[in-house]
Length: 455
Image 1 (cartoon, helix red, strand yellow):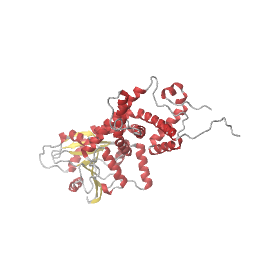
Image 2 (cartoon, helix red, strand yellow):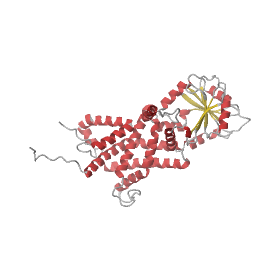
Image 3 (cartoon, one colour):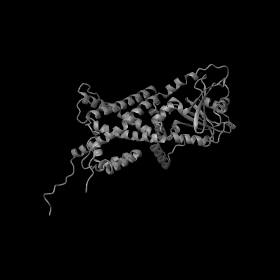
Image 4 (tube, one colour):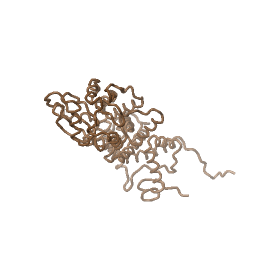
Protein backbone atom coordinates (compact mmCIF):
# COMPACT_ATOMS: atom_id res chain seq x y z
CA UNK A 1 0.00 0.00 0.00
CA UNK A 2 1.08 3.57 -0.53
CA UNK A 3 1.91 5.65 2.51
CA UNK A 4 -0.23 8.73 1.92
CA UNK A 5 1.54 10.55 4.75
CA UNK A 6 4.92 10.45 2.92
CA UNK A 7 5.82 13.64 1.03
CA UNK A 8 5.46 13.43 -2.73
CA UNK A 9 8.81 13.98 -4.51
CA UNK A 10 8.32 16.36 -7.40
CA UNK A 11 10.86 17.62 -9.88
CA UNK A 12 11.89 21.23 -9.34
CA UNK A 13 10.03 23.75 -11.45
CA UNK A 14 11.72 25.82 -14.13
CA UNK A 15 11.97 28.91 -11.86
CA UNK A 16 13.47 26.75 -9.10
CA UNK A 17 16.04 25.31 -11.50
CA UNK A 18 16.97 28.80 -12.67
CA UNK A 19 17.30 29.96 -9.05
CA UNK A 20 19.59 27.02 -8.23
CA UNK A 21 21.69 27.69 -11.32
CA UNK A 22 21.93 31.38 -10.47
CA UNK A 23 23.05 30.67 -6.90
CA UNK A 24 25.67 28.15 -8.01
CA UNK A 25 27.11 30.41 -10.70
CA UNK A 26 27.14 33.28 -8.22
CA UNK A 27 29.35 31.22 -5.90
CA UNK A 28 31.61 30.29 -8.79
CA UNK A 29 31.85 33.92 -9.83
CA UNK A 30 32.65 34.98 -6.27
CA UNK A 31 35.43 32.45 -5.66
CA UNK A 32 36.88 32.90 -9.16
CA UNK A 33 37.07 36.66 -8.60
CA UNK A 34 38.56 36.25 -5.13
CA UNK A 35 41.41 34.19 -6.58
CA UNK A 36 41.86 36.13 -9.84
CA UNK A 37 41.74 39.77 -8.78
CA UNK A 38 45.45 40.19 -7.78
CA UNK A 39 46.61 38.41 -10.94
CA UNK A 40 44.19 40.29 -13.19
CA UNK A 41 45.54 43.61 -11.97
CA UNK A 42 49.18 42.51 -12.42
CA UNK A 43 48.59 40.96 -15.84
CA UNK A 44 46.58 44.01 -16.98
CA UNK A 45 49.43 46.37 -16.06
CA UNK A 46 52.21 44.27 -17.59
CA UNK A 47 50.08 43.44 -20.63
CA UNK A 48 49.39 47.12 -21.24
CA UNK A 49 53.11 47.87 -21.16
CA UNK A 50 53.88 45.02 -23.53
CA UNK A 51 51.37 46.36 -26.07
CA UNK A 52 53.81 49.19 -26.70
CA UNK A 53 56.90 47.01 -27.05
CA UNK A 54 57.85 48.39 -30.51
CA UNK A 55 57.70 52.00 -29.34
CA UNK A 56 59.44 51.32 -26.02
CA UNK A 57 62.26 49.29 -27.57
CA UNK A 58 62.71 51.88 -30.31
CA UNK A 59 63.10 54.56 -27.63
CA UNK A 60 65.61 52.44 -25.69
CA UNK A 61 67.61 51.75 -28.86
CA UNK A 62 67.60 55.37 -30.03
CA UNK A 63 71.24 55.95 -28.93
CA UNK A 64 72.24 53.22 -31.40
CA UNK A 65 70.48 54.68 -34.43
CA UNK A 66 71.54 57.52 -36.77
CA UNK A 67 75.19 56.84 -35.98
CA UNK A 68 78.06 58.80 -37.47
CA UNK A 69 79.46 56.71 -40.30
CA UNK A 70 83.15 56.98 -41.16
CA UNK A 71 83.01 54.89 -44.32
CA UNK A 72 81.28 51.86 -45.81
CA UNK A 73 79.87 49.23 -43.47
CA UNK A 74 82.15 46.33 -42.62
CA UNK A 75 81.14 42.89 -43.85
CA UNK A 76 78.50 41.21 -41.68
CA UNK A 77 80.91 38.35 -40.99
CA UNK A 78 83.34 40.79 -39.31
CA UNK A 79 80.53 42.29 -37.24
CA UNK A 80 79.58 38.80 -36.08
CA UNK A 81 83.17 37.88 -35.22
CA UNK A 82 83.57 41.05 -33.13
CA UNK A 83 80.41 40.21 -31.20
CA UNK A 84 81.60 36.63 -30.58
CA UNK A 85 84.90 37.92 -29.19
CA UNK A 86 82.96 40.17 -26.80
CA UNK A 87 81.38 37.09 -25.17
CA UNK A 88 84.22 34.59 -25.03
CA UNK A 89 83.18 31.03 -25.89
CA UNK A 90 79.80 32.07 -27.27
CA UNK A 91 78.04 30.82 -30.42
CA UNK A 92 76.45 32.87 -33.17
CA UNK A 93 72.69 32.65 -32.91
CA UNK A 94 71.29 35.40 -35.16
CA UNK A 95 72.01 38.68 -36.89
CA UNK A 96 69.38 41.40 -37.17
CA UNK A 97 69.50 43.46 -40.32
CA UNK A 98 69.69 47.15 -39.34
CA UNK A 99 66.36 48.86 -39.93
CA UNK A 100 68.13 52.00 -41.17
CA UNK A 101 71.42 52.58 -43.02
CA UNK A 102 72.95 54.29 -39.98
CA UNK A 103 71.71 51.90 -37.29
CA UNK A 104 73.95 49.64 -35.23
CA UNK A 105 74.07 45.95 -36.03
CA UNK A 106 72.49 43.67 -33.43
CA UNK A 107 74.20 40.31 -33.12
CA UNK A 108 72.65 37.68 -30.87
CA UNK A 109 75.15 35.27 -29.35
CA UNK A 110 74.49 32.46 -26.92
CA UNK A 111 76.55 30.81 -24.20
CA UNK A 112 75.35 28.33 -21.59
CA UNK A 113 71.72 28.88 -22.57
CA UNK A 114 71.94 32.67 -22.06
CA UNK A 115 71.46 34.93 -25.06
CA UNK A 116 73.25 38.27 -25.28
CA UNK A 117 72.50 41.08 -27.72
CA UNK A 118 75.68 42.81 -28.86
CA UNK A 119 75.35 46.20 -30.58
CA UNK A 120 78.16 46.70 -33.10
CA UNK A 121 79.01 49.93 -34.96
CA UNK A 122 78.78 48.98 -38.67
CA UNK A 123 81.86 50.92 -39.78
CA UNK A 124 84.21 51.20 -36.78
CA UNK A 125 83.24 47.74 -35.39
CA UNK A 126 83.12 49.31 -31.93
CA UNK A 127 81.03 47.46 -29.32
CA UNK A 128 78.37 49.99 -28.35
CA UNK A 129 76.46 47.82 -25.89
CA UNK A 130 76.08 44.22 -24.76
CA UNK A 131 73.07 43.16 -22.72
CA UNK A 132 71.58 39.74 -21.87
CA UNK A 133 68.35 39.46 -23.83
CA UNK A 134 66.37 38.49 -20.72
CA UNK A 135 67.47 41.70 -18.98
CA UNK A 136 65.96 44.02 -21.56
CA UNK A 137 63.01 45.95 -20.13
CA UNK A 138 60.35 44.36 -22.32
CA UNK A 139 61.77 40.88 -21.75
CA UNK A 140 61.41 41.45 -18.00
CA UNK A 141 57.84 42.68 -18.50
CA UNK A 142 57.07 39.63 -20.62
CA UNK A 143 58.56 37.29 -18.00
CA UNK A 144 56.44 38.88 -15.25
CA UNK A 145 53.37 38.67 -17.48
CA UNK A 146 53.92 35.04 -18.38
CA UNK A 147 55.80 33.55 -15.43
CA UNK A 148 55.64 36.01 -12.49
CA UNK A 149 59.48 35.71 -12.38
CA UNK A 150 58.96 32.16 -11.05
CA UNK A 151 59.75 30.01 -14.09
CA UNK A 152 57.46 27.08 -14.90
CA UNK A 153 55.75 27.30 -11.49
CA UNK A 154 54.80 30.90 -12.21
CA UNK A 155 53.59 29.93 -15.68
CA UNK A 156 51.31 27.34 -14.08
CA UNK A 157 49.90 29.96 -11.68
CA UNK A 158 49.25 32.37 -14.57
CA UNK A 159 47.50 29.61 -16.52
CA UNK A 160 45.34 28.78 -13.50
CA UNK A 161 44.48 32.45 -13.00
CA UNK A 162 43.61 32.83 -16.69
CA UNK A 163 41.40 29.72 -16.54
CA UNK A 164 39.52 31.01 -13.50
CA UNK A 165 39.27 34.43 -15.15
CA UNK A 166 37.47 32.81 -18.10
CA UNK A 167 35.03 31.24 -15.62
CA UNK A 168 34.64 34.60 -13.90
CA UNK A 169 33.82 36.44 -17.14
CA UNK A 170 31.40 33.78 -18.42
CA UNK A 171 29.52 33.48 -15.12
CA UNK A 172 29.52 37.26 -14.75
CA UNK A 173 27.85 37.66 -18.13
CA UNK A 174 25.14 35.20 -17.13
CA UNK A 175 24.58 36.81 -13.72
CA UNK A 176 24.42 40.41 -14.92
CA UNK A 177 22.73 39.88 -18.29
CA UNK A 178 19.74 42.28 -18.38
CA UNK A 179 16.55 40.23 -18.16
CA UNK A 180 14.10 42.76 -16.77
CA UNK A 181 15.99 46.02 -17.26
CA UNK A 182 14.19 49.02 -18.66
CA UNK A 183 16.44 51.42 -20.52
CA UNK A 184 20.20 51.62 -20.73
CA UNK A 185 20.90 52.82 -17.19
CA UNK A 186 22.34 50.06 -15.06
CA UNK A 187 23.10 48.04 -18.22
CA UNK A 188 25.28 50.15 -20.53
CA UNK A 189 25.30 53.40 -18.53
CA UNK A 190 26.11 53.43 -14.79
CA UNK A 191 23.83 55.20 -12.33
CA UNK A 192 26.27 57.50 -10.60
CA UNK A 193 23.95 59.20 -8.11
CA UNK A 194 21.84 56.37 -6.71
CA UNK A 195 23.84 55.61 -3.59
CA UNK A 196 27.10 53.84 -2.89
CA UNK A 197 25.89 50.25 -3.35
CA UNK A 198 24.16 50.97 -6.65
CA UNK A 199 27.16 52.99 -7.83
CA UNK A 200 29.64 50.14 -7.32
CA UNK A 201 27.17 47.56 -8.62
CA UNK A 202 26.66 49.56 -11.82
CA UNK A 203 30.36 50.31 -12.26
CA UNK A 204 31.01 46.56 -12.03
CA UNK A 205 28.09 45.39 -14.19
CA UNK A 206 28.30 48.08 -16.87
CA UNK A 207 32.07 47.73 -17.24
CA UNK A 208 31.62 43.98 -17.51
CA UNK A 209 29.05 44.39 -20.28
CA UNK A 210 31.45 46.59 -22.25
CA UNK A 211 34.70 44.63 -21.86
CA UNK A 212 33.71 40.97 -21.45
CA UNK A 213 34.05 40.06 -25.12
CA UNK A 214 37.48 41.69 -25.40
CA UNK A 215 38.59 40.17 -22.08
CA UNK A 216 37.58 36.68 -23.22
CA UNK A 217 39.44 37.26 -26.48
CA UNK A 218 42.64 38.20 -24.63
CA UNK A 219 42.32 35.25 -22.25
CA UNK A 220 41.67 32.71 -24.99
CA UNK A 221 44.39 34.00 -27.33
CA UNK A 222 46.86 33.80 -24.45
CA UNK A 223 46.27 30.06 -23.96
CA UNK A 224 48.69 28.85 -26.71
CA UNK A 225 51.56 30.35 -24.67
CA UNK A 226 50.65 28.48 -21.50
CA UNK A 227 52.45 25.37 -20.36
CA UNK A 228 49.74 22.74 -19.87
CA UNK A 229 47.11 23.99 -22.34
CA UNK A 230 49.72 24.86 -24.95
CA UNK A 231 51.41 21.46 -24.77
CA UNK A 232 48.02 19.76 -24.88
CA UNK A 233 47.18 21.82 -27.96
CA UNK A 234 50.41 20.65 -29.62
CA UNK A 235 49.61 17.05 -28.68
CA UNK A 236 46.17 17.27 -30.28
CA UNK A 237 47.73 18.72 -33.42
CA UNK A 238 50.25 15.89 -33.55
CA UNK A 239 47.46 13.31 -33.22
CA UNK A 240 45.36 14.99 -35.92
CA UNK A 241 48.24 15.47 -38.34
CA UNK A 242 48.02 19.27 -38.27
CA UNK A 243 51.23 19.99 -36.36
CA UNK A 244 53.27 22.97 -37.54
CA UNK A 245 56.83 22.50 -38.78
CA UNK A 246 57.83 25.63 -36.86
CA UNK A 247 55.79 27.86 -34.58
CA UNK A 248 55.88 31.58 -33.88
CA UNK A 249 55.31 31.06 -30.17
CA UNK A 250 56.58 28.95 -27.26
CA UNK A 251 54.94 27.57 -24.13
CA UNK A 252 57.86 27.60 -21.71
CA UNK A 253 60.76 30.02 -21.42
CA UNK A 254 62.72 27.29 -19.61
CA UNK A 255 62.15 24.84 -22.47
CA UNK A 256 63.11 27.56 -24.94
CA UNK A 257 66.42 28.16 -23.16
CA UNK A 258 67.15 24.41 -22.93
CA UNK A 259 66.42 23.93 -26.62
CA UNK A 260 68.72 26.81 -27.49
CA UNK A 261 71.52 25.31 -25.43
CA UNK A 262 71.11 21.91 -27.12
CA UNK A 263 70.92 23.33 -30.63
CA UNK A 264 73.92 25.62 -30.36
CA UNK A 265 76.15 23.72 -27.94
CA UNK A 266 78.06 22.10 -30.82
CA UNK A 267 79.06 25.46 -32.31
CA UNK A 268 82.10 27.40 -31.17
CA UNK A 269 82.92 30.99 -31.87
CA UNK A 270 85.50 29.85 -34.44
CA UNK A 271 83.02 27.65 -36.32
CA UNK A 272 83.15 28.19 -40.12
CA UNK A 273 80.23 29.88 -41.80
CA UNK A 274 79.94 27.00 -44.30
CA UNK A 275 80.35 27.54 -48.01
CA UNK A 276 77.65 30.19 -48.13
CA UNK A 277 78.66 32.63 -45.41
CA UNK A 278 76.64 35.21 -43.55
CA UNK A 279 77.64 37.99 -45.97
CA UNK A 280 75.99 36.25 -48.91
CA UNK A 281 72.89 35.40 -46.89
CA UNK A 282 72.58 38.97 -45.58
CA UNK A 283 72.73 40.29 -49.14
CA UNK A 284 70.02 37.85 -50.25
CA UNK A 285 67.84 38.77 -47.26
CA UNK A 286 68.15 42.48 -48.05
CA UNK A 287 67.23 41.84 -51.67
CA UNK A 288 64.12 39.93 -50.56
CA UNK A 289 62.80 43.13 -48.91
CA UNK A 290 61.18 41.33 -45.98
CA UNK A 291 59.07 43.31 -43.52
CA UNK A 292 61.34 44.49 -40.66
CA UNK A 293 62.67 43.51 -38.27
CA UNK A 294 64.54 40.75 -40.11
CA UNK A 295 66.84 38.22 -38.48
CA UNK A 296 69.30 35.77 -40.03
CA UNK A 297 70.11 32.51 -38.25
CA UNK A 298 72.89 30.09 -39.23
CA UNK A 299 72.53 26.34 -39.77
CA UNK A 300 72.34 24.49 -36.46
CA UNK A 301 71.48 21.16 -34.88
CA UNK A 302 67.79 21.44 -35.80
CA UNK A 303 67.95 23.11 -39.20
CA UNK A 304 70.64 22.54 -41.88
CA UNK A 305 69.77 25.78 -43.71
CA UNK A 306 70.37 29.45 -43.21
CA UNK A 307 67.09 31.17 -42.32
CA UNK A 308 65.98 34.75 -42.96
CA UNK A 309 62.84 35.60 -41.00
CA UNK A 310 60.62 38.63 -40.87
CA UNK A 311 59.47 39.25 -37.29
CA UNK A 312 56.87 41.87 -38.22
CA UNK A 313 54.47 42.48 -35.37
CA UNK A 314 51.28 41.91 -37.35
CA UNK A 315 52.46 38.36 -38.31
CA UNK A 316 50.41 38.47 -41.52
CA UNK A 317 53.35 40.27 -43.15
CA UNK A 318 55.87 37.68 -42.00
CA UNK A 319 57.85 35.67 -44.55
CA UNK A 320 60.46 33.01 -43.80
CA UNK A 321 63.12 32.05 -46.37
CA UNK A 322 65.50 29.07 -46.15
CA UNK A 323 68.86 29.31 -47.94
CA UNK A 324 71.19 26.42 -48.69
CA UNK A 325 74.27 26.21 -46.50
CA UNK A 326 76.29 25.05 -49.50
CA UNK A 327 75.64 27.60 -52.21
CA UNK A 328 73.26 30.15 -50.66
CA UNK A 329 70.44 29.38 -53.07
CA UNK A 330 66.86 29.76 -51.91
CA UNK A 331 65.55 26.40 -50.69
CA UNK A 332 62.05 27.36 -49.60
CA UNK A 333 59.87 30.33 -48.79
CA UNK A 334 56.89 30.37 -46.45
CA UNK A 335 54.53 33.32 -46.15
CA UNK A 336 51.62 33.66 -43.76
CA UNK A 337 49.20 32.33 -46.36
CA UNK A 338 51.26 29.14 -46.73
CA UNK A 339 50.78 28.14 -43.10
CA UNK A 340 48.12 25.74 -41.87
CA UNK A 341 44.80 27.45 -41.16
CA UNK A 342 45.21 26.69 -37.45
CA UNK A 343 48.58 28.47 -37.40
CA UNK A 344 47.04 31.39 -39.27
CA UNK A 345 44.22 31.65 -36.71
CA UNK A 346 46.60 31.42 -33.76
CA UNK A 347 48.96 33.91 -35.40
CA UNK A 348 46.19 36.48 -35.92
CA UNK A 349 45.05 35.95 -32.33
CA UNK A 350 48.55 36.42 -30.95
CA UNK A 351 49.14 39.52 -33.06
CA UNK A 352 45.88 41.04 -31.76
CA UNK A 353 46.77 39.96 -28.20
CA UNK A 354 50.10 41.78 -28.51
CA UNK A 355 48.45 44.88 -30.00
CA UNK A 356 50.21 44.56 -33.37
CA UNK A 357 47.44 43.39 -35.73
CA UNK A 358 46.00 46.73 -36.81
CA UNK A 359 48.24 49.39 -35.36
CA UNK A 360 47.41 52.04 -32.75
CA UNK A 361 43.71 51.15 -32.64
CA UNK A 362 44.66 47.61 -31.59
CA UNK A 363 46.87 49.02 -28.85
CA UNK A 364 44.11 51.36 -27.71
CA UNK A 365 41.59 48.50 -27.50
CA UNK A 366 44.08 46.48 -25.48
CA UNK A 367 44.68 49.30 -23.02
CA UNK A 368 40.94 50.01 -22.65
CA UNK A 369 40.30 46.31 -22.01
CA UNK A 370 43.04 46.22 -19.39
CA UNK A 371 41.63 49.32 -17.71
CA UNK A 372 38.19 47.70 -17.79
CA UNK A 373 39.55 44.57 -16.09
CA UNK A 374 41.21 46.68 -13.39
CA UNK A 375 37.93 48.57 -12.91
CA UNK A 376 36.07 45.26 -12.58
CA UNK A 377 38.58 44.10 -9.98
CA UNK A 378 38.42 47.28 -7.88
CA UNK A 379 34.62 47.49 -8.04
CA UNK A 380 34.30 43.79 -7.14
CA UNK A 381 36.49 44.35 -4.08
CA UNK A 382 34.41 47.35 -3.01
CA UNK A 383 31.14 45.43 -3.47
CA UNK A 384 32.51 42.53 -1.46
CA UNK A 385 33.70 44.70 1.45
CA UNK A 386 30.40 46.58 1.60
CA UNK A 387 28.35 43.37 1.60
CA UNK A 388 30.47 40.91 3.62
CA UNK A 389 29.39 40.48 7.26
CA UNK A 390 32.00 40.76 10.00
CA UNK A 391 34.00 37.64 10.74
CA UNK A 392 33.14 35.68 7.59
CA UNK A 393 34.32 35.64 3.99
CA UNK A 394 30.90 36.67 2.70
CA UNK A 395 30.53 34.02 0.00
CA UNK A 396 27.04 33.54 -1.50
CA UNK A 397 25.19 30.74 0.34
CA UNK A 398 25.52 27.22 -1.14
CA UNK A 399 22.66 25.15 -2.52
CA UNK A 400 21.31 23.26 0.52
CA UNK A 401 21.30 19.73 -0.96
CA UNK A 402 24.40 20.31 -3.16
CA UNK A 403 22.66 18.69 -6.14
CA UNK A 404 23.84 20.33 -9.32
CA UNK A 405 21.91 18.47 -12.00
CA UNK A 406 23.05 16.88 -15.24
CA UNK A 407 23.28 20.14 -17.18
CA UNK A 408 25.58 21.84 -14.69
CA UNK A 409 27.61 18.66 -14.28
CA UNK A 410 28.13 18.53 -18.03
CA UNK A 411 29.10 22.22 -18.09
CA UNK A 412 31.69 21.64 -15.35
CA UNK A 413 33.05 18.64 -17.25
CA UNK A 414 33.40 20.66 -20.48
CA UNK A 415 35.17 23.52 -18.70
CA UNK A 416 37.48 21.07 -16.91
CA UNK A 417 38.28 19.26 -20.16
CA UNK A 418 38.94 22.44 -22.14
CA UNK A 419 40.94 24.03 -19.29
CA UNK A 420 42.78 21.07 -17.71
CA UNK A 421 44.50 23.15 -15.02
CA UNK A 422 41.06 24.42 -13.96
CA UNK A 423 39.74 20.84 -13.97
CA UNK A 424 42.55 19.66 -11.70
CA UNK A 425 41.94 22.64 -9.40
CA UNK A 426 38.20 21.88 -9.20
CA UNK A 427 38.91 18.27 -8.20
CA UNK A 428 41.43 19.37 -5.57
CA UNK A 429 39.09 22.02 -4.14
CA UNK A 430 36.13 19.58 -4.07
CA UNK A 431 38.18 16.97 -2.21
CA UNK A 432 39.55 19.50 0.28
CA UNK A 433 36.11 21.02 0.85
CA UNK A 434 34.39 17.67 1.40
CA UNK A 435 37.09 15.92 3.44
CA UNK A 436 38.71 18.74 5.39
CA UNK A 437 37.33 22.28 5.23
CA UNK A 438 33.63 21.46 5.72
CA UNK A 439 34.44 19.32 8.77
CA UNK A 440 36.10 22.15 10.70
CA UNK A 441 33.23 24.28 12.13
CA UNK A 442 35.13 27.58 12.27
CA UNK A 443 36.51 27.17 8.74
CA UNK A 444 33.13 26.03 7.40
CA UNK A 445 31.45 29.06 8.95
CA UNK A 446 34.07 31.50 7.63
CA UNK A 447 34.05 30.14 4.07
CA UNK A 448 30.27 29.67 3.91
CA UNK A 449 30.46 25.96 3.10
CA UNK A 450 27.62 23.48 3.39
CA UNK A 451 27.65 21.15 6.37
CA UNK A 452 28.70 17.59 5.36
CA UNK A 453 25.93 15.03 5.16
CA UNK A 454 25.64 12.63 8.08
CA UNK A 455 24.62 9.02 7.70
